[in-house]
Each structure stands twice: as structure tokens, then as C-alpha cells.
Image 1 (cartoon, one colour):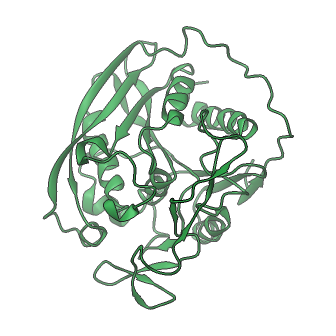
Image 2: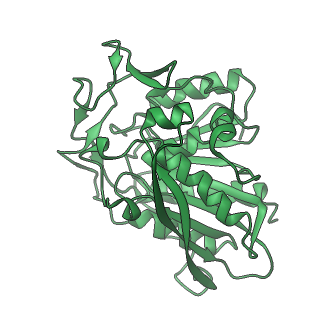
Length: 324
């Protein structure tokens, strides 16, 4: 259904999952592949400064059952690292005949979790890693380079959303290929980048929960409005009873407070010339010590929203990848 924002009422009790655990959701082959990237400050990324730390990270390629070159969804984790939702989506997509390439942006950098200290890693590094994954997938003999989609979660959802910006592609994507679609889950939309409505002509589908107090979906709605006003194919689906990380099958039910987690939900951040990110309230460079940074968002699983999002994502990708 076309439209800027779709609110999906899914009821109060989870339906039975339609697919029993069986053989279809097993990958025919799994490969761990190196990705050459850099570790940069956000300012370095925004200005195209390549004088960062050379970094080797890895991606897990799960090749779905099938022959020849297959479509792939790149999965970018969030601030908790390789959480159970990565395994969930890998299995669900593999069962649909879609391979997955899950990027681990933390282990190669000596990190496991940044929820309580986001300053440990510039947020835009994940976009650089994502473009690096295209270098690997574009030449893999089992990957169709014309059928690669990007899907990310929270910090990885933010990277997925803004990886669509043409300016970033020109500076950093050297692979010669592009994503057919961008699927951010509960992304951080609190930052406005220069030229952020000049994006690749590919569909964007955003998924989030009304109850999300980590990355409020209301802020993403305003960005969606700006993108649609510029003529782009962008849709946002909102689940009224879902909180942050609703698709993590091992998350708390109901969602629970995470006291030490940092959230910029009260901040408005804007890129200024020279790649400086400004706190619009103070007019000073943004820092995680700013008073707008909050703590204690709710994080937890919502089986109903997960089921609905899974159905929606699979239907969208079947069309985008021309599987039907």
C-alpha cells in the first residue's frame, strides 16, 4: 500500500508462526568473508578524509538453497552487536530463497556493545562498512550483484537509511553496484545531513514502533515527509504496541528499561560545513555529554509486530528481487 505512513494494528496476542522450523531455513553454505574498511570519526566520513585506521571486519554470508547467482540482503546490526534478530532474519530470508550477508562491525574493532557509550565508535562507520560489503558481494560467484538489498537495525538502521544519500555513495562506494532497496528498522533520525534528500532512486521502507523511546519514530516521519516531497519512494510502517528492538526474539516481554543506554531522542543534530555535527539547541559541536542525551529507553520483543514486519518484508523483497 502506497503512502507516507502506515499504522498496522496487529491485536493483543501473537499468532502462531506460519513456518515450522525445518530444512528450508538452513543455509546451503555459510562463508565468513573479510571486509576491508576504515575506522573514522564522523567528521572524517563527512568530509571524505581517508586518513583513518585501516580495519578488517567480517561478514557472514549464508547462501540460500538454490542454484546460480542468488539475491542477497545485507544485514547491519545495531549498538548491541550481533543480536538474535540477525539470526532470526537470516533464517527467515534464507527460507524464502534469499541469501544474507550479516556484517559484524564490532569484533574487528575490539567492541561488543556501545549502547551505554556511543562515543566509542563514530556512527557513520557502519555506512563505510556497508559499502565495503558491496566490494565483496559484487564479485562473489553465488551473488547476483543486481539484486542486493540493505536492511539494518537501530544504529544499523540509521546507517541503512543514510547509506542511500548520493553524496555518500560518490565519496565512499567504489564497488560499482548499488542496493535495489533500503529497509531500516527503528533507525535514529535525529541528525540532518547536508543533501540528505538527494538520495539514490531506490525504494526505502522504514519499520518502527509507536512506543519506541530510544529512536522515536515521530522524528523519522518528518524526514519521510521531506523525502517524499522530493519525489522519492519512501514508506514508513508503524506498529502501535512495539518498542525498540521489537524483532529480537530473545528480548524482554514486555519491553524493559535499560538504565545505562544512551539515547539522543531529545537532541536535534545538524551537519554544518566542514563535516561538523552541531547540537541545534546549544549551537556547539554535538557530544554525548550534552544535556539532551537521555538514558533508560525501553527495549524488548513484540511477537505480533515481528510477525507483521516479517510478512511485509518478505512480500516486498519478493517483488524487488522478482522472485514471483
